[in-house]
Image 1 (cartoon, rainbow, N blue to C red):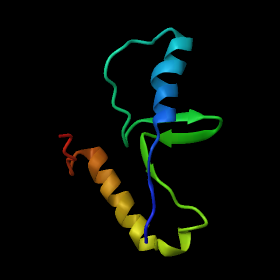
Image 2 (spheres, rainbow, N blue to C red):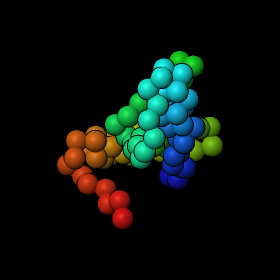
Image 3 (cartoon, rainbow, N blue to C red):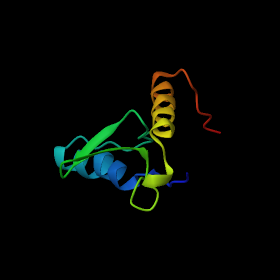
Image 4 (cartoon, rainbow, N blue to C red):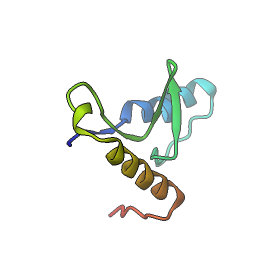
Length: 86
């Protein structure tokens, strides 16, 4: 099954710029909004990266596939799997 990966830049901008500016905590620089960072906007929780499952692909993605993706995600967050940045 195929799906799209979501790089949730809108959530990152809200978290690091808009929310911080309103709260008076904004500071410039480089920030990483990855799998281990979350922000809730309008009752929906976002992380920096996610995958799309919708009516077009949900029947193509098995529970086993999702479990393997979530397992890899947990290993990336824990540092067991290191994703190269260069």
